Length: 451
Image 1 (cartoon, rainbow, N blue to C red):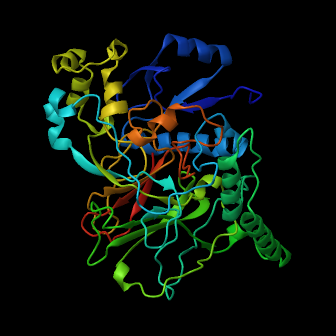
Image 2 (cartoon, rainbow, N blue to C red):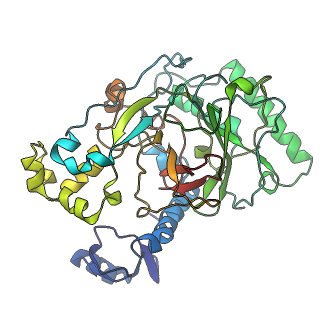
Image 3 (tube, helix red, strand yellow):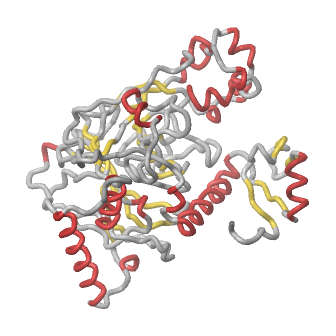
């Protein structure tokens, strides 16, 4: 498919198909027989990431490069093999208020009944359940308009951008119009722009042409207006811990890729909604986005509080070993399929630990790296998860699919209309971006992590 075989050293994470045993905190591995034969046949020289925190940046680099290659080599086609659902009805209906609910199904096993040792590790998380809609500035939303003071400058990114033309750069307007056509497409119904959308497309094209004809530097070379990512009111998400009298969280990002990890750069703001007088009606938008997945689809939210338990990687070696004990599961009355007998920890990771999707709080979704402790740059306090920005609301089976979505998720759907990707956001190699904040002072600088 790619027309060749890599030469020299090829860097790997500890994939199970290749690694039978990790030998201490080093790059040494006992490899599986089939992997040894595979490498011998193609002349590959394996280089493994270091385990633990010393190798965290290496593992992240592997997945970051995979995502970078995938987006540039395949673009929309890389996701065309996925099938989805009509996020908009044929009539183009959208949710216009927070009048809908989403309910996480009960877990197939009561965690603390089987493993009471995990009870002290329970955390509350709020799944946001974003769904395409028409949010206003007074709504909690993903990708919606912000309650932004008219007299306050709009955030711009002044950082250096990775100046590699992805080949998929589009203006945010173009991205949204292309999505509208895909969402409405049916074999028996021609998908065309509405008159209002067609007029918007013409205005956008004229705007881009005007800038091009002016001979200005490339958009990536200039200060870039940031795009709204999420707005959360404390009344909707009481798990937030804002500073002072603030009751509103707003996060924006620059839709160009930045080092490290090829990700958008974020900006975080806390404010009091009551202090906002005149609202900025038409904030500036960037001329283009590096990748369509960096343009969030406007969504309303149906926040739901759930109880989470740690990712298995966050557990002590003793607790991890406990999860691997099949007899312990049976003694606790867990009705697991026999297919999990060899790997019961996988069942915990997929169905019982931390929830996928957009959420506030809870436990982090490790996977790209082993767990990493992050510390505040100002006071050195250990930082805590604030928000998970997810590429998908769920992945695989129906265990985490909200009850109200299960019929749609299980049905047949058209390509490009994925029910588990309502926001249109993709970060990393379809990973998650975690926003961490200082528990001592939310006003201290935040940090991001791709997982």
